[in-house]
Every structure is written in C-alpha cells, then in structure tokens.
Amino acid sequence: MTQRQTIDKQSQVDILNERFADAAPETVLEYFLETYGDRIALSSSLSLEDQVLTDMVCRIRPGARIFTLDTGRLFPETYSLIERTNRKYGTRIEVFFPDCSRVEEMVKQEGINLFYDGIEKRKLCCEVRKLEPLRRAFKGLDVWICGLRREQSVTRTDMKLVEVDASNDLIKLNPLISWTEQQVRDYIREQNVPYNKLHDEGYPSIGCQPCTWAVEPGEDVRAGRWWWESPEHKECGLHRRR
Image (cartoon, rainbow, N blue to C red; front, top):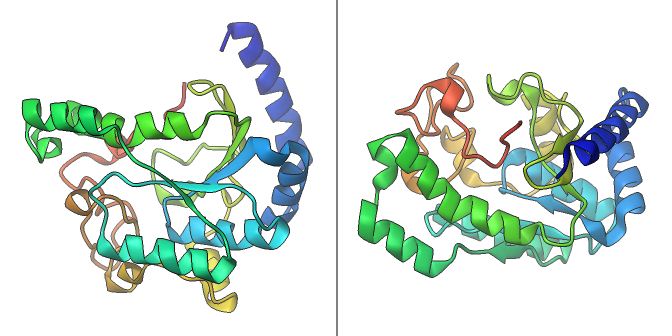
C-alpha cells in the first residue's frame, strides 16, 4: 500500500469510527456485510468472541464467508468445535493450512518445538503456520472481521472499531472492541452459541496446544498464551500494527 493509499484509507476509517462510535455490533456488521458483499469475511480462531461474531454474521447474512487457520497444532476440542459450528449454522467454515514444504523445512532446521527457544523462533513458527495461510485467505477481500477486544491484552488497549491493516492492504473490523468478557459470556449463554469446552477448564484464550496453558482465577486472560514471554510480546503477528 502506498503512503497516499494509506492516508485515503485512514480518512475513510476515521469517518466510519465516528459514524459507528455508539453502535451495537449487529448494526456495524449489517452495514459492512451489505456494503462489502463477497469482499468481506470473518477470520475466526474459534474463540468465544469469534463464536459470538459467527452467530451474529450467520443471522444477518447466511452464507457469509467465514474462515479459520489450522496450524496443525490445535487442540482436539477446537476441531470438534469447527464441526459443531458448521452443523448449528448450516455453514462451511473454510480451513486454511500452512504450506507443508515450509513446515517440513522449518522443523528440519529448527526442531519440532522451536517456539520454546526464543521470541524470534516462535515468530518464525507463527509466520509459517499462521501468517502465510492468512495472506492466502485474504485474497479478494477488502475487509476482515476480527473478535478483538480492548480488555484482552495490554497490546490491544488502543485498538479501534475500524482500523487500517496496512500490512495486508485491508480494513480490519473489530465489532466487539468495547465489549467486556461478561458481555461475551452472556451472549454465548443467552443465544446458546457453541463454544470450546476448554473455556470451562481454565483456558480463557486458546491457540496452538503446545503454546497454551490454563490460567489461575484472576490471572490475565492472555497469561496462558506463550507463557514464557513477557506480556508486551504476546502476539503472533496477525494483528501487527504499523
């Protein structure tokens, strides 16, 4: 994206943030799904937030595009949730896998659990298993919908409802950005939304199995993700801002 394109897109985003400053997530989703048609998709990690958004999106526009990334290191419960979600909503979540040759080369050079050996190697693993498949999933899109909330992490406190994703030349939409965890859980319960059963076992944030721990009551919701790293580094790169 050129500097001029970034400026133009940022102006558009500023207008949208002002317009929908006090709007409900459903109202925001209705506008974007209608405006962008087949050029918008929900990128789901199967989190509580993304399951809420799946429910909303499927109610507003059945057949809307939803995709997820299978890193090859997910929990069995996550795979089960994909199937349960497809059955409940009559949808077909698209699954993007990493390039097998890149995974094989990475493991050959760095080992099967390289992510424990430092931030740079962990980021390499995230690049191969998440970011490259994500870029393929983005082809043909103008907007991607995310389940980010400001409460989730110290790295997300200043995020906006609508943002420019300059790295991918897209608009990123965060309909639940101002929601609390309690609002998310209330919606899940009231609407009978399927969710990952690991959330009932102390896993507030669920990613790859080797990189996710259960947390103790009162701990930060991201404490169990990449627990060997400091909080300011706990992002895989999907939500990099620059």
